Image (cartoon, rainbow, N blue to C red; front, side):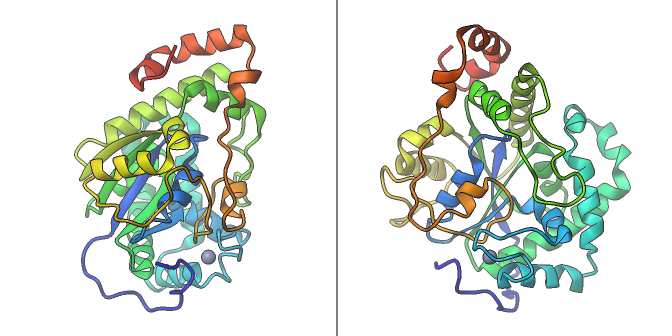
Length: 321
Ligand SMILES: [Zn+2]
């Protein structure tokens, strides 16, 4: 299915509930790449971090992976129009989602108290999220919407009734690589309130801890979903097609003949929101080189310290200690 051919369609009158392939996990795990690869399989439509739509759209600075601003991209302009028609205030949802993304709330996400504290805002955001996903899914005319929103808070939102059909692809990357990535780069959000607030500000040890916590919560929240599969970034990088096919089959999806080639990490543009700009705005056919600089550049002392901190989770996901 060509990603750039549908846009100004009115919403498809399909009445089934949206089918979402949700990529969950910790930040800096390679989810933008995973979304871009999944989006190349027939019947899959990669929307990127759909949970960030409100922030990207409200800021007026968000850009789609097709290269256009969200206002100019016919796909997202249509989605925004659907939301407004159904009474959703995009700017207010941007505020709500910013509150949710605060890292300090992470430990409370699974508690009843968390939802009680943010109940009114939570309900409104959950209802708007329904409208957003239904619109994107209908306009995509795809079998599956690929959403790489990742974070536990967003998965929790999607689990609010009425249910979507959610398949969880849990992406895990070695926590030491994630912490190193935080240390090396500073994440800058594209505009909106809180721009740049989620950055590599923490002590690396706390990055390791947040990594383990986010993965733990994704596992917990995955219970009861229509399907779950685990995919390690390192396996994806080593054998792209084989690892993706295996993950999709675990989810009960027949990947068919199309999609990425056996050893290919080549990118194709999709109508995706947020995430790594190097991946999203790469020219068609650009090959990604997997990033494992931490193995060479992290000194022995820190490597040992981080390994100790990440030990239980590393072991759980089959990493060599
Ligand atoms: Zn676009």
